[in-house]
Length: 102
Image 1 (tube, rainbow, N blue to C red):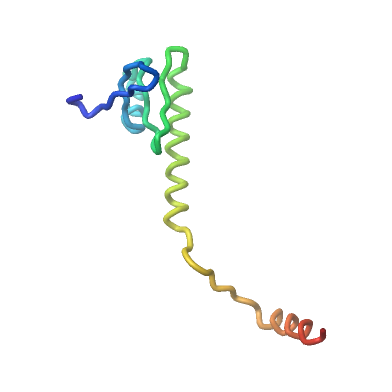
Image 2 (cartoon, rainbow, N blue to C red):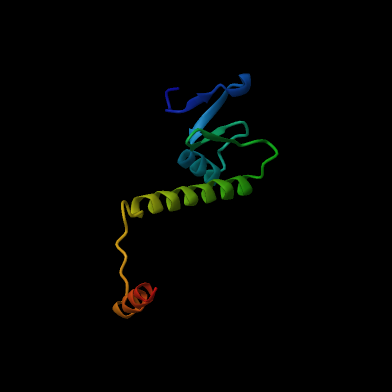
């Protein structure tokens, strides 16, 4: 489509598919229509149905966006490779004494 939207062909049903940010913006403006599918990322989709309350659906999308942000932050800050282990010198002396006593 000319506006950058995609089309969801699942279940033989044609519906507009928008990004998470686009859906949040439209919901906040009161312009998201029932039947629109939201791309949540990684192949996950959520459809805004006529029975859905706009405020509840918006809360769901915002919560999902926060979870994605937390996951991305955790992934970026994850330590790669072996983690250096620091042992207190007194604790090491006790562990060595126990090992040598056997």
